[in-house]
Length: 439
Image (tube, rainbow, N blue to C red; front, side, top):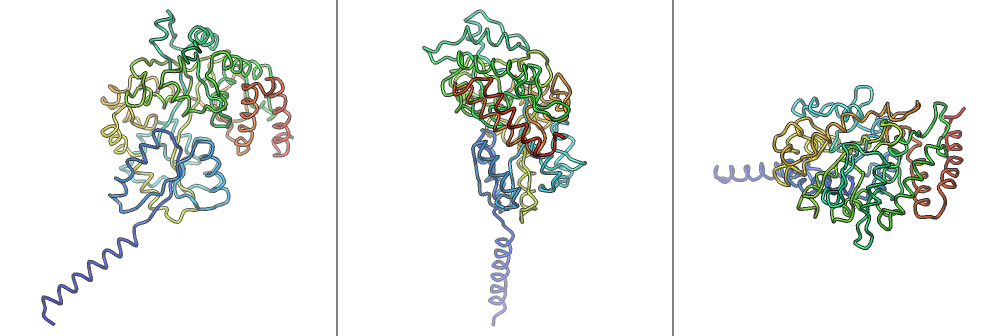
């Protein structure tokens, strides 16, 4: 056989072998995430990671309540359906301690762990192990329409009281124009309506449990807080409140139907973005309102990416979560989507960026809110738990959703506030007794 032909055959065989090896090394990972705007951008940019690594992403994008149910079921049963999960500051320490999540301490020196905002990193760490990396983090604050306030001769203080919020909402509601004084979450779920309600109860002086783990759901503080919520929503809120979660209220506000909206600081990037908001040039912000105490009046949360120990593709999954939560990713979002859309709340370098500061007038306020959210000083009276808008115990998912359903029934008029709270007081007390908290 001529040497030239032999070399050609060998070269072809080598190329084919390399292609087969590459094919064998490439993997498809399944990523479960929430249908929020920041995650939609992650999905949009993921082909860049796919091209760089040769791997593929199979996306499962779900509404918030459904996502929580699916990933909880999968990880508790070791189903292995997902290689990367989007979870929060509630699940991470519980699941990490249970051994259900892979530690993420080994993403490399170039990941720059010290750049992560301290309270956010701390909330995802158990016994020195980081069990999830933050994609975006948030507190809560008050967004409002400065044009409507100016036209009505109203002035929003730096931190309003709930009495002032009521006064403003009364004056700014005009249902004939589909203009509602205040939009709040009403969709039942421990992470939907109860995210807001938890902070409302805190600042009204309430708590979920006393130091003996006895539920306090029918206390005067709870009744006053929920009474305020129900009365204000009936008078000044949009129709169909029990169907309105974060995304629905964001749409209402961005389309000009809400004079005020108390919700996640992460919404700021979207309602200030003229590509996504009709009121981008009319928005202003203040701190979350207070009532009896400032403790726990604004929440602390991080939507984060975690890797379940059930995955068989841990290395590829780590490559993806490193890419999606890196400084380079934040830079890439700023370049492609506009700096106002950059993932907020996770990295100091984002808030040090002149580009971000210029695009995001809310940056300093958001950073201060996130850094001041203290899950150990969240109530007026002492409590045996940590967590601001949630209680960091495994039973809270069920308890929080049950209470959320009762409050949704109260706001729609299916039952009175007293009946709703007395009902969940009895059922939650039984749950805590059966779980061994109440001796």
